[in-house]
View 1 (cartoon, rainbow, N blue to C red):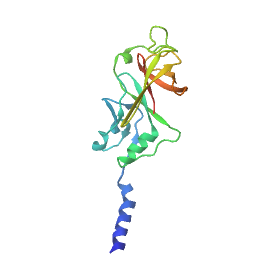
View 2: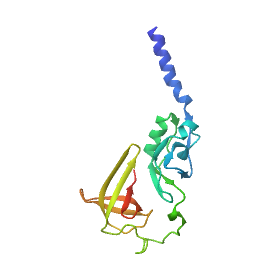
View 3: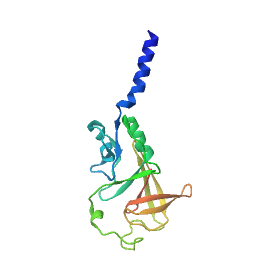
View 4: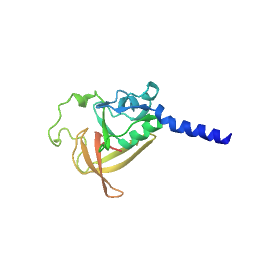
Length: 175
């Protein structure tokens, strides 16, 4: 009896991966709401899985990144079969709209008129991941406009952090 029970469990465990939905990464990941969902990232995700939130969406007209490790863990937890592309560490998420999306891009580093963060400014640095949000103060090492990358100095540890400017005196560290 016990042997038959164990054989049944083993059969189910081996057959379970065959029932997983195979998904692929979208060529353009575009968040349309307040959160990046599984459906925004993966093609072929079932409707109930596609609605699941992965991370907060960037502000309208902004971009953010998601690490491949986060995507692989989310796909696995949802019972999806997905193999990350070789050599890809993160993917970019775009959220259309917003005033910044309508402006012509500046060439090179920002001038005095469009810098949202200036060298030496105190900046509120945030890091967000599903279920976690951290913020701290840092000092800007460069001038940067909204949407551009900036180097920041963690004044507590004297370590340099790369981040993306999200507004005046604010930046977001990517996972």
